[in-house]
Image (cartoon, rainbow, N blue to C red; front, side, top):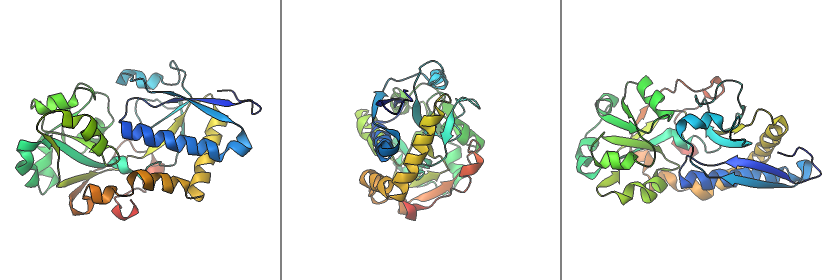
Length: 272
């Protein structure tokens, strides 16, 4: 990134390895952040990459891929200490931490009958390799099948390699429409809601402290102005009703990967 404020700042933004719904939202937040700091920091442009990186390459986003920033979960274990600058402000009110199940339609009665976590823990939860979710669910006693990738997860669910998979409330509708619904017999479960703190935050290249400062200031600006809430409401303002979140049985999990500064986060559907 060009640090000369007399020139246009080009920000290399990696926006791959995520659902289209997340890509659209996170792109819009970044644009708002840069717009909110333009007067103080100068003109800008975003150079976006949507390339899918294998899980073992995500840690190379800065060191080898040369990107300036991306959005990921706080406490992402694929990036070692010191390899990033984390901006400690959640972008989506922890929507990713409200997890809904995609299941086989033939199993709808099975999941409707689950009333306690122990019953769900006995079933197999399919998670793509290297996703942080696997560590969280194992820590909480869930039976995890960690294999494959985002592209084949629903083929394997359809073929009964496991019993269900979970996705955040901010992405499950898009994931279902664009991917799961293409396989016959898969549906979104209507009864269970899992929760754990799983905030999405900006990670910035450690060699770009000025960019990190700009992103942090921009987030503060769009938070205080109400712009961040406006973006959230435009994308997710109806999500509680759409997904019937208030009528579901909620099971709360602990996230052992969560940095201490996010430990205050708990389930709060009224805040969505």
